[in-house]
Image 1 (tube, rainbow, N blue to C red):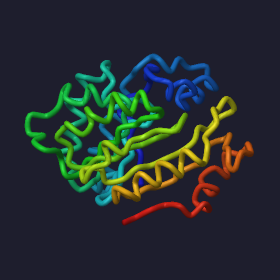
Image 2: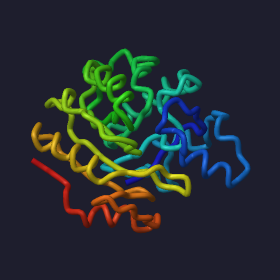
Image 3: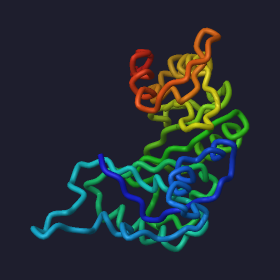
Length: 238
C-alpha cells in the first residue's frame, strides 16, 4: 500500500470533519490546514527512480488525497491532471475517500464512461443526515468500484436503502483523538446486520478513542483501536 497526496489542506463541511486529523496534525506544526496547496508529490505516480522504475510499483493500492479531499473546489484544475496520471498508471489501484461526492462530476475526464477499472471511490457518511444526502447521489453516479465509509461513526445509521450490488464494501470506525466523540458498539452491530442482510462485505476498522459496549464507556489508546476492532471478529465477507 502506498499514499499519494497531490494537494494538502481542506475545509470542514459536515459533523464528521469537526475533529479532522489533518487539522490536528497541522496545528502541531503551527500550519493553517484551511490553506489548500499543491504538494511536491503532485506527480508522484509518474516519478521514477534512477534505474527507470516507477517509485510507485505496479500492483500497489494507492490511498489518494488523504490530507485533503480529491473533489475539493480549489483543486478543480489540478484534478484534471491528476485524473490523467491515474489513467496512465492503470497498473495501480487508486483508493479515494470523499465527503464531497456531490462534486464528483466536476473536472471528470471525458473518457470516464462508467468508471476507470483502477479507481475505487468511497463516499463517507458519519450520521443519518449525511447518509440521506450523499448515498442517493453516490448510487446514481457512473463509478465502477464503490464503497461506503461510516467513519467517524457518530450515531446509529440506516444505510440499507443504498446497499445494492454496486457497493463492494462498507467500512466502519470510531473517532480518534483527544476530543473524540463516542462510538457505540450497538451502532456497529446494526450496520453489520444491514450488510449481512444485503450480502455486502462489512469491515470494522477501528473502535475510536471512546467506545461504548454493553453500556460501559471504554477509553482506548490510539495504538489499540485497530487491534481491538479486529479482535471483535465481526467482519463479514459473503
